[in-house]
Image (cartoon, rainbow, N blue to C red; front, top):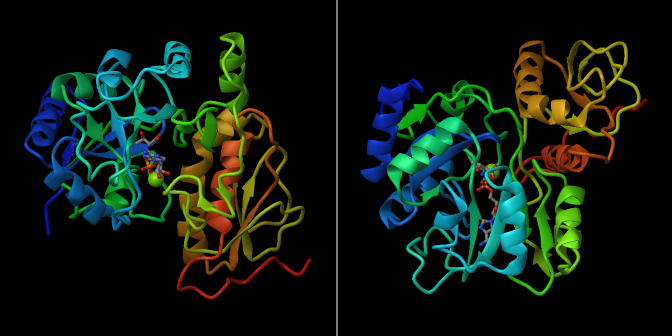
Length: 340
Ligand code: TXA
Ligand code: MG
C-alpha cells in the first residue's frame, strides 16, 4: 500500500505534482468540474495503473487533458465543429471526441484502442498551471473508485483512493461540481454523449451560428449498446438506495431537496433553495456524500431526491441522479420507492 501525499496548491506542491506525473506516477488534481486522477497519457504503464487504482474496466477510455487548444489539436483532427466549439468553450467543461491524428502521442491504453480520443482543456487555474508544467497530455478520469460518487474536494479523493495513488494536489472545491459535457465529433453529426458542465443548448447554438450540422441529442444508450464505453447504467452510487422525483418524504429518509424542501425528512441537503441549476450542480456530489454518510450513521432507509427541472444544468444533474438510482450489479434491487 502506498502512502498518498497530500500536496498544497502553492508553488512547491504544484512542482511536486508535476514532477510525479512526469515520473509516471498517479496524482489527483482539481479541475473546475471534478477532481481527476492524472497520469502521463503517453506512458502505458502509468495509464494501466490508473485503471487499476480506480478498478475501472479497461475498455472504458480516458479523457486527455491539455493546457490549450493548440496542444489539443496536436493530438486530434481539428474539424470545423471542433474549431468553433474550442473557440467558444475552451478552457472549460467541454470534452470533444475526435479522430486521433496519425502522430498522436497518447498511448493506446488511454483510448482503449479506439481510433478516437476524448480531449479537454480544463479552466481551473491550478490545473492549467499543472498541465503547462507537465507539458504533455495528462489522462484523467474522475478520481473516484469506479462506480462511486465523483470527488469535488481533495478529502473526497482521499476517502476513495488513499493508499492507491501517489498524491493529491489540493485545489480547493470544484466550482462546477459535475463532469464535463462530452460531445462526439467523429461522425457526420455532432452527438451528445454525456450531459455535463456546459448546457447542450449552448453547444447547439454555437453550432447553429457557425452553420454546422445540428447537435444530435441522441439518448446515451441505444439498442446497439452504450453510446460511450463509460455509459454504464449504475454509477455515482451512494451506499443507501436513492429514489427519484420524490413529492413526499418519510421520517426515516434523507432528502436531497431542490427549491423549497419537502417537510418531514430526518436529514436534508438543499441543492439550491433558490432553484438555480448551476448552484445545484456544484452542490450535488458533496450533498449525496453527506446524506449517504450521515444517513447510514442514523440508520435511515434511503435517500429521496426531489425533481430537478430540465433547463440549464438540470439534464446533467438528472443524468447523475438516474445513474445513482440505477440497480447495481451484484446487489438486490434496494428498498424501492416508498409506499406513500
Ligand atoms: O469533467 C470531466 O470530464 C472529468 C475531469 C477530471 O476532467 N473527467 C471525467 O472522466 O469525467 P471520466 O473518465 O470519469 O469520464 C470520461 C467519459 C467516459 O464516459 C468515457 O467513456 C468517455 O468519456 N470517453 C472517453 N474517451 C472516449 C472516446 N474515445 N469515445 C467515446 N467516449 C469516450
Ligand atoms: Mg467518472
